[in-house]
Image (tube, rainbow, N blue to C red; front, side):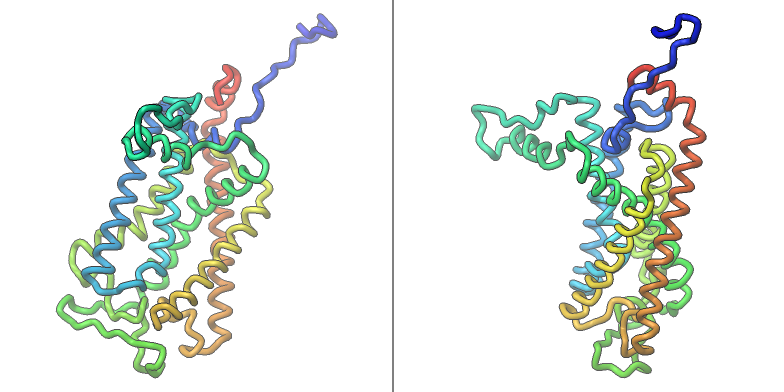
Length: 320
């Protein structure tokens, strides 16, 4: 009964809305416990880190691409996911095993290189923010990038870049070109190196699939199963943030041109077909990123509908 009017039923009062930091630490599904979620996040973080390290070794050391590798789309997308999953793992670990964050305290009697103090230092770096405001906005944009950009990279590569690459034989020598080459002499492929991702053996194909297919499956699992982050609002902040990230990546590509002497992708080379196609390509990529963000938001909405009952039950019992 209501306190002001005993004839009226008491209104149900739910706990405050959890922050985005806590929602990253809680699965939207009751069958995925907090402990299981922490283990899954740790395994994904280790797997992505291993893939990143192996790909660096393969591309830089074996394939002799050198610094060019660090300017590719797949590399940037994978790096964002690696950072996101280590952050989310430590936050989930703290949420479940150490909610008071005592594990980040330096152990007296041990020097700084002692394993316990190294672990404490890592915990301090990845400590969950205690306040929202600007921190929440910045992290929510980063979250949007982590679950949107992998889809952009996957679709762009499979629908646009792969069909444009010739399937060269494994024993065919690679042809490297520079900005001094004439447009007719330049092979229309990624990085100025004439190869196809499936023409250099099993390992290269395996790495390519991880960077341009498994990455999207992981992002899909993050949206539907691993985090209870809601549809981002206001959406315009995230759209602006993603556009800025796209433009920063374009600037990064031109920095790569200065460092390596090679355009990583032909669509940013003004001497290939002129400046206008470059501008059109950049606008197209940013527009597609915004479209993909809208689709990702729809994915969040579908998951919210599917898990609404469990979410309300958790809030009713005071769970974040």
